Length: 203
Image (cartoon, rainbow, N blue to C red; front, side):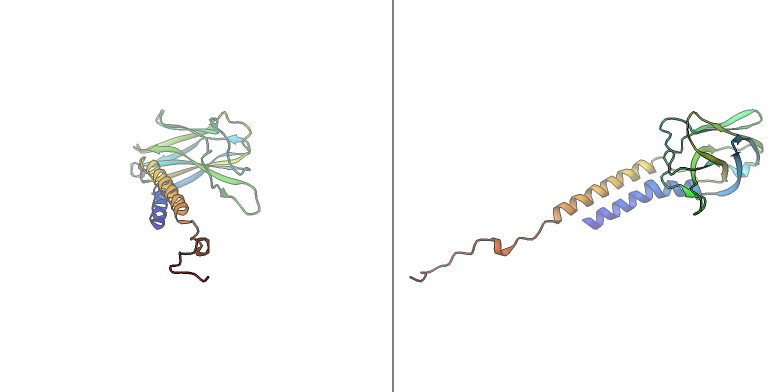
């Protein structure tokens, strides 16, 4: 039974954690990366997109001197994307769910935190203006912010994460219970009373 629960735990990890992460970061092809914040200044960027790029996943990489971003319910960054005077994407980014940020360099304490701003499902050929700005979160030691666009991305099934987390919980609880039920010590034969002896004993 322990082996079965381990398999359930591994399956839940793959469905709930690895699959969404891989789809977000590696599906499709990368269109490009643009620096939108540096030396204390934000600047909008204009990117020409074509209809064959759709759908386009919009990612934001935040480089900060921190081990993790603690923003609670506050917004670290805001992002809008517009074309022909029409806003096609508006998002708020918190970065507080990033558990394993990338390291810029072994010699530097800066870490790179990635968050997803959203997906532009339908793309009309032409220039798109992406504007990133500060949110209401304070004391975030930002060094740089990069806009990352990926085209032809696959959509993550929204059912994957809750199903995966449920399987992880079942597998973990079942594995721990199997350890408790099968982890007792064997009985010591010397602790049992001796069997009765039949017949007459010595006088």
